[in-house]
Length: 241
Image (cartoon, rainbow, N blue to C red; front, side):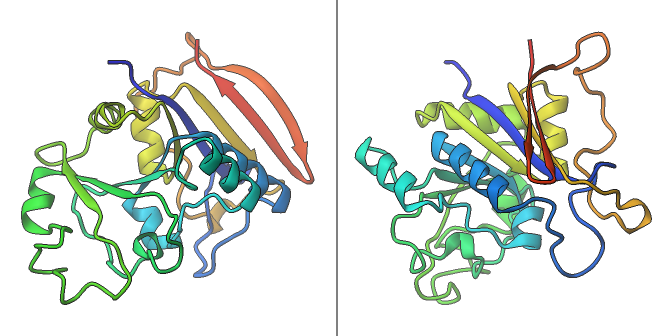
């Protein structure tokens, strides 16, 4: 069974930070680039993020453009892709916008990939003691919980499960731990980097990637296939061999 085609996407400062240390979310991109990302979302079958991104940004991970949503529906696909969260601990807030079906009835389903230990000690399903039916906010949808490892969550196991669901194209939107996992496992087919025109230095927070053994080395570099100026933002698009 072929694995899905994986696009890793991030907006970052010149020195590789995804955000600063302030409590407010730092805007590293602009409206035109947000629309570009929305077009990429509309082209894929699943969006993958880490639990840290859900906690920090509380994203909905939906296709925003009504025209793109209609185009997906006309093609027999849901208005937005399947949304997958990697959470080894399973500790996600049931009130997160990701689970809010009342906000958007056409939202794609949510799958949480966790560890066997995470599923046992902190399950997210409707039968859970911690987040059982009585404590889930009204209008929230229980995610499907899939345990794929004893302790951690291997990205290969996630992709294998997604492939079994008929998923062919995946967009990985972060954060740094998830980017690192997919890139170090050599599972990224394409890389989209939107680079803001500033450095954060000592005010920088989470990074695009963490220290790891990456196969995208000087001996096997990625191929730069596109550069684009989007206002003050530089888009770099790479592919592996």
